[in-house]
Amino acid sequence: MKEPAEVTRLIAEIEKVAGRLDVLVSNAASGVLRGGLELSAKQWDWVLATNARPLLLLAQEAARLMPAGGRIVALSSLGSQRVIPGYVAIGASKAALEALTRYLAVELGAQEITVNAVSAGAVETDVWHLIPDGAKALEAIRAGTPGKALVTPEAVADVVFFLASPAARFIQGQVLTVDGGYSLRA
Image (cartoon, rainbow, N blue to C red; front, side, top):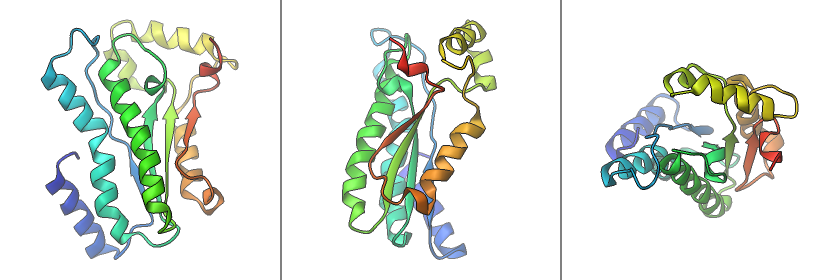
């Protein structure tokens, strides 16, 4: 959902059905696996519009329905901070999403709405089977984590749930990394 009209329709439907919005999770993710010198302008624009723009559009529309204590959580990726071969457009788009998280946190803080992001490491899903040598890459990542375990979708969801809870009311503009410790190693 990256077009303004789509977002407007979604938020209008939420307002009609619920009258308010307490938690918004922006989990847009897609991309083109190519190096920066191989990307076309169209691919670059598409990835940034798919991964970063939805958070901005959703926050703009959703904030008016959010009471004090509202929560916005965006999903990011380790590629925002670390160089992953072929991940330049996705990584740059997630870095933009993380910067936007900080800016929105400041803007919405006066309304007592928190805005944070969860940066997931390699999550064990079927998408890895679509990537050339994906299974091999997953095993290398698993071996590089201190506990020799990959992050699960449930583990990421647990952190999102925490950020959406009252317990996280003083966490604002932060990016929480959920990667099983993979990013600790050089």
